[in-house]
Image (cartoon, rainbow, N blue to C red; front, side, top):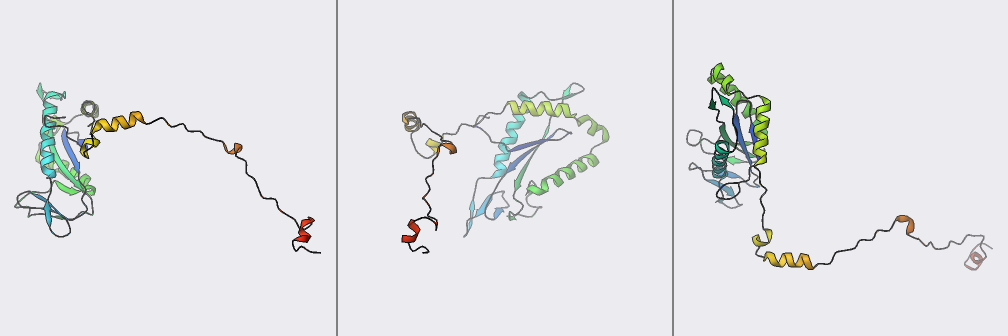
Length: 219
């Protein structure tokens, strides 16, 4: 929860090197286009229409997480200095989503990827971190599983469910909805067992019955 309202965060991944990766899943039914200015557009069958930027949403969520880690989360310390997490944001799309991107030299869109490529990207990021940082630096950022579990539980404890007023969203006075629910009489449901049901079967007439002769039976 932030000052502008409630931010919905889909998933958080915390690595052993205290990298916090925010996963924002998006689903589109048509082609997605990212312009050189970072604008997101969606094809409506005739032309591309601008949509709310998932990248801007991730930026707001990253700012919120930064405030949370600074104020509400007890982070581990190294030689008395708090160890700050490295925050990253990834936009996950369907593996079948078609994305039109600008050249990587113009705009980096590597954070927008298919969901089935995330694990590969995460492992490659960890390998690059190991090769570019000294072993001493890696050990300084390493956090045991118990510490990561404690941080994850503290984050989960800050979760607040969003109360959405669906009646107001569609233009209905919420008081009318509550009045209709309160005035509705409770329904009584009576269940009958299968043994209490009586089934009447039509009588069958055999060929030996006297009435069978009058109905064209054998003489």
